[in-house]
Image (cartoon, rainbow, N blue to C red; front, side, top):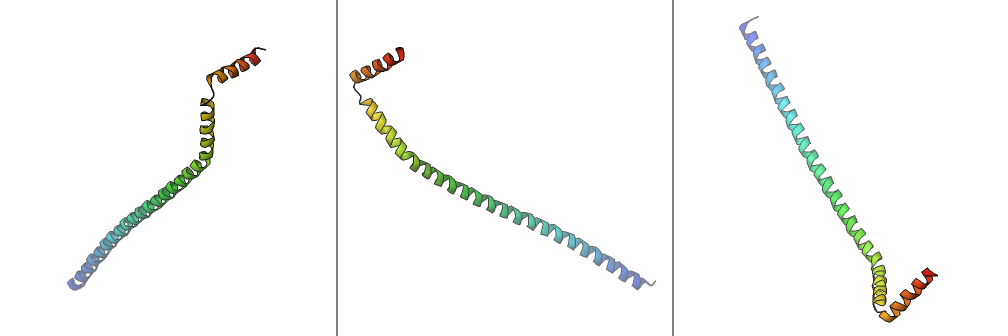
Length: 103
């Protein structure tokens, strides 16, 4: 083999090494970009899920408050009615209950 041929083989080997190194760098870059994109998508999905959860929770609170309002109003009315009973009437009621229990 002549020196010229050996030199060309050496240059071809050097170019092949350079191509392999560039391919490795490109593959690592693609992997890193994929990781970043995956993390962004993950964060978007989590943020959307949190938003939907918060919306559902708020809607449930509103619905619960709407359902509880009439019950609370009735309870307030009963509470007020009980408070308005005169002590004398209350004593009569208590005496009546005690009498029923004892007999």
